[in-house]
Length: 188
Length: 383
Image (tube, rainbow over all chains, first blue to last red; front, side, top):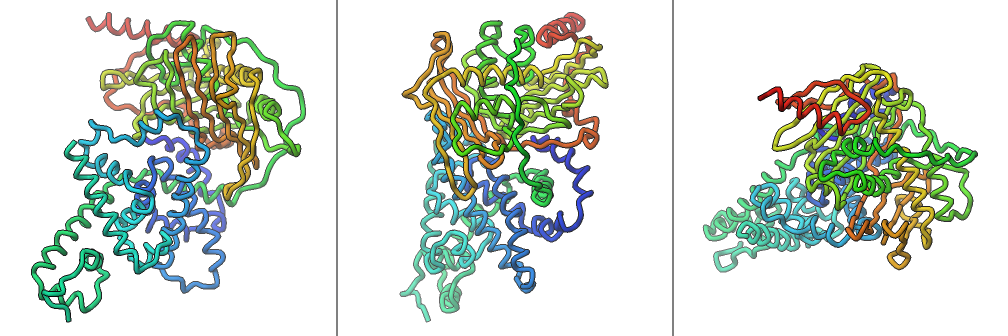
């Protein structure tokens, strides 16, 4: 049982009482289509499930304004919306990383505990995967995480702010670094 | 057309694996076995990446959370005003209740009363931030003392059922090693019915570590303890007058903790203004390390307050007690108040724990005593 279950169970009773205008099904449909993928992207970018949840939630809240602003432009394709969602999520992830650096007073040992490769847990494939991703610089991490969600070079460029013509080169380097990190950790 | 003499670079092989190759490159790949082999290698790496990423677990309740966020955004009605009035008086804390209080947070270890008191104070310094400061008609300049004063004003219970979730990182010297570390706490408190609550502690991976619930309306108290790889579920019947109001106790601790923070000197207040809005930071720099009674030393503390609604968002603190270092880090994730009538009754029971060892007993006000005696009783009966 997750920590949010009580909240959700509590809230489910009120959710349906809200008018359609307040609970836009359109956004929830988009969540069903892209929510899991966005969460996985954010989880690879950040250190915790909780932070990734925050990013996904904020992304879809912002989507309401985005859709309202483009209400007249119903021709916006699903592909464009997907790229927009990942761009917003990538920006929020960057904000999270910056905010943490700026004013989270984590103690040194705390930081070390969070970033060090846990020798025992690294035997677990998922832990190894996430730990290897976490060793990458933020831009490399973003490139790899977006690629893992199947985004095109064009969409990756939009989300990361790098030129589309540079995505392939940068992604190749990032993948090589990730591969090296994974290989090194699997041998420890 | 490219020939074998013009094999693709690693970058272009990567582009081909990513379905971004140009037509001329695709022709070359059809003709060149060497490049195709390199392409297969990169594709395998891509597949491995995608497969692993696809197995990153997605919280089942994420959709509900997003849905609620959308609702809350629509329902936002603006700030309320800060209440006028006197600061709440400091009431005495019943020390006999401290073991239960700490147990409720899952603290199990070498517990003696003085140590419990220490841990309780430190934990209380964290827990005060779960309360929120009401949005005031804010003065232009806020001092640390004013901010802390207003935090005291907020300690009066609200009406309805309050849900709070917060991340908590503890490094306390006198609690069990299992409980030190990072976890998430969920608290559900019915402010309309004294002593009705549910506290649950989760590990970072989402697994429940400990829980306690009490419902005077149903005459029950349930505590869950995880030990030796299994859950133990203690079900106590409680009678009128034997309620253990942990929420109220927590409130007393919060008051005490804020008083401690108020009497130390050297706090500074600064503002942060970014895309998330303005926040106040009340900080006790390391240079202004404070000592309370020569026993409890606060070497650093920092509280971050959202200036728009005065919710305290983060707290970190470190110091020592009797020479033993401690550190705490708190981050509020969610706070919500709902009409109690909308909260299902079963929400005030602890989560299901299939396979748990269940022990039934009569409860008193002393949870630690009840846990110990009922466990020993069960042990004796099993022999």
